[in-house]
Image 1 (cartoon, rainbow over the protein chains, first blue to last red):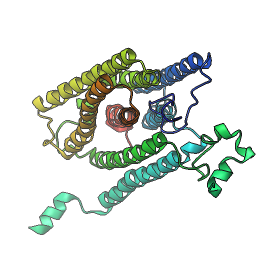
Image 2: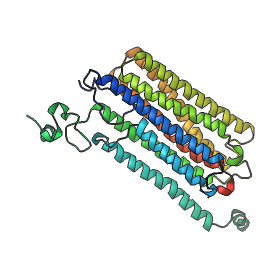
Image 3: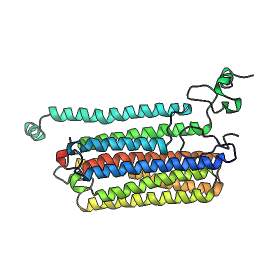
Image 4: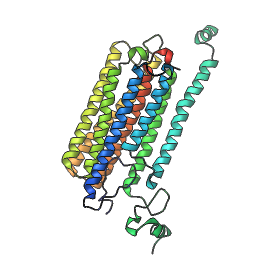
Length: 136
Length: 224
C-alpha cells in the first residue's frame, strides 16, 4: 500500500523518499527535486566545458593535459552518479554502493591490467619485422 | 506472532513504528525492502556488468591506440565540434529523463510524455550525429577495417551507439505503456530501470568523449 503511494518512480536506485505529509510538503519536495537535477546539470555542464576548454587552451601545463581530462571525467561521472542516479550513503543504498565499488575495482583491473601487461609485451617482444625475418 | 527481525524494526531506537518500514535495509533489519529498491538493485547489477563490458572495450582501445598501420590517427580524424554537440544532446536528454521521472512521481501524463518525447528527440539527434560522423570516416577511407586503432574505435563507440539506439526503442515502449496503461506500479518499476539505463549511458559517454575524443585529439607528443 505504501509502495503504491511512493513518490518517485524515477531514477532512484535506493532511498525511499517520503511522500510528504500531503500538505505543502508535496510542492516543496518537487521543487527541491527539480533544483537537485538543475544543480547536477549545471555542474555537469561546467565540467564538460572545462574539459573541452582545457584541450584548446595554452594556459594549462601542456604535458599534464591528459591527466587533467581524466580527472575532470572522473569528477563528472561522480556528479552523474550523485545527482542523476541518486547513489547516496543512505542505509538502503548500501548494497548499491558495495556493488558499485566492486564494479569500479573490476574496471580498474581490466583497464590498467591490460595496459600494464600489453606494454610489457610490447617492451619485451622482438620487433615484428625481425620476427618475420626469423620465420623465413 | 512476530519474527525477531520485525521486533528489531519496531525497536524505539528505529523511530516511531509507522516509520519503521522505512528504517530498513542494507543491514538486514526491518524486513524485506520495498520491491522498487529490489528492482533497482537488480538492474544496477546489470548496469555494472555492462560497464565492465565497456571497460574491456576501453582497454582494447587504449592498447591499440597507436596501431594505426599507416592510416589516419585520432588526432587527424576527430572533429571536436561534432563531439561537443553530441555531448550536449546526451547530457540534456539525461536531464529531461530526470524531469520525466519527477513527472511520473506527480502522475502527470502530459509532462511525462513531453519530457520523454524531448529525451527521445535528443537521443535521436545524438544517434544521427554519430552515424554522420561514422559514415564520414568510412568515406574518407578510415573505416573499421583500416587499422587496429580504427577497429577498436568503431567497436567501442559503436557499442555505445547501439546501446543508445536500444534505449530509444525502450523509451518508445515506455511512452506507449504510460499512455495506454497509466502509472501502474509495475510500469513505474520498468521506467525506473529505463531511467537508470539512460543515465548510465550518459556516464559511459562521459568516459568516451573525454578519454577517446578529447585525449585522442591531443597532439601525439603530449600523450604518454
